[in-house]
Image (cartoon, rainbow, N blue to C red; front, top):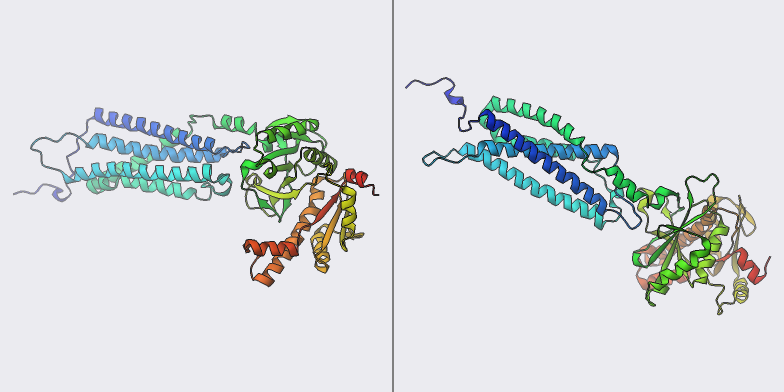
Length: 477
């Protein structure tokens, strides 16, 4: 028997394609690829819309990010579309007495399994990412981003997926299969770049529609930074008042009051407060927190007027919106961080400001803090900004039964006023931690409730703000 040439590497003949079938397969693959690319694009935009917060904060993608994700979507879609074409070319009815071809069956199984397994894995991963960083984890898109830190993962996915589609085909057709793979790679790359330029939805318009209602986008709002803060987790009990500046105004300090995404005059604030309370139960009204989001350059006379309006509405719990010092993420991520304060209602019938002031003066350790437009005076001694905390801490250590009398200057900016509050609270927090570690051998934040109460009694945070209006009530110089 005569052996034929290259009998050891004889090319399989189980796939015979006409030009018409090749064209139909390519068209079917491209059609499927574009449909799948469109689906991935829409899913991404849906996740972005679902990420919108109550303050109209949105997962914003830069032009580079959009093009990168579009390109990855295009590559994945075209590779799966190519697999669809392979199935069309290789899958044909088997003749009755035709011998089973295991190589052909392997090629078909590879393409089917690849499509089903990859789509299942990719969809689950996308859903988990969307739920964690778009829905469940509020503002998670500020904390974790796949681009550019982890863009190589997508590149590796594309490479592995492409090579996997050619795995059995390359083993079967040897060099010719590798040649086809190279041509396919060039073709897919060219078409992928073309697909990636197709934006099915105007993402910039979506961004603009939501950002038009975003307070940070429309106004100047730079919050003070502090190491002393807390997170308010009961968001349903929080009402936000924004005291900001327009981005177009020439002089700083001119306030704009924004409530529920609407501008409002300061004279109308009490009506808005009453409206908020009318929507709450009697049980929830005392537990409500009125959070003041104040731009740093707003003058304190404006802030004091707002606080007077709050006291007239019977409000006692307020909180200043703050940002942690040396924050790691974007400032807009820290929307739950606050500095809580108790607002005394000096206008109430049961309050006697003069009697309270007299009782305060009976305390032996009185720490008087006065503030000019450029200097800080603690017990009539000039103190630099970076020395406020240590000075207050040292004075409290002398006698923990103390009171801080803080004379608020109406002419200073809010961030200058807040330096006093923040520094005093940080001093108390350090004393609490030191006492906690000494007595309980653990930090204050790790104490049990009873232990925490004991430490708070030892080092309470006592500050008595003396405003211009309060001076008139108690008739002091």
